[in-house]
Image (cartoon, rainbow, N blue to C red; front, side, top):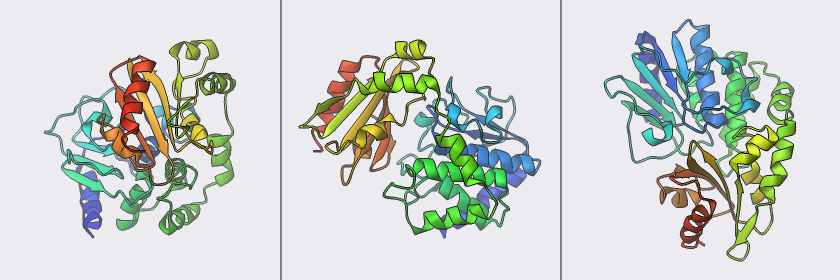
Length: 318
């Protein structure tokens, strides 16, 4: 009931705004970008002025088939009177601080101690922010177009790790079924999302996988990427982000980590199986996420010191 009222307030603020800035988090994944593009398509269709902002230097190329992807910008407009944060548990995840004087809304599925927006819509029972955003449209009886539905579908599918995460439930499939009513072409989405691997990716994957080290009797597996490999292969920094899930697929491993340097900081993705909570591990380094999927950044570019810090912390939980 609380979120229902907040969804209605969110819609009122959107209607009253003159120019909306939709903000995604740094090192963007499909969930944050899909939610932003969902809103962007809805705003465009209803002649609502807006921009989608992301601070990162590169965006995941595999998502470039989504409508309005090419309109995402790292340039902040001179004027905006409403901010909507999507999939941003806190200001740290955005990578830039925005004025507190501008009314803001945060819609997210990560539980956080910092309610930094004027309206905070949070539901950590959802498998993705895209699934939560779907409720915004439903509660306000808003039509979801085909292009909008494609964005939501991608966000739900990707953040649930292809519908395999523990948070995938009956409601998830109900939402996906409803999105199908918008006549989305799942075959088209799957082809563009899953079957467009670049040659650069195939050259980069074995380099990263060859760095695999096992610790704690094989329970913890870690891989890393060297920046020079991007130059050698022609890949971009997000080309192999899913390799952490590949590592976790190894039967013996219960916690997997993938490390790479992004903007002169070490970015680490964590995944786990069963009851091992990597969100607690990430929180030790001011990171965040969910029980089986989390991330963090360290102010270093040294792989060995990163391994040491992670190993010392992980040993406390296994």
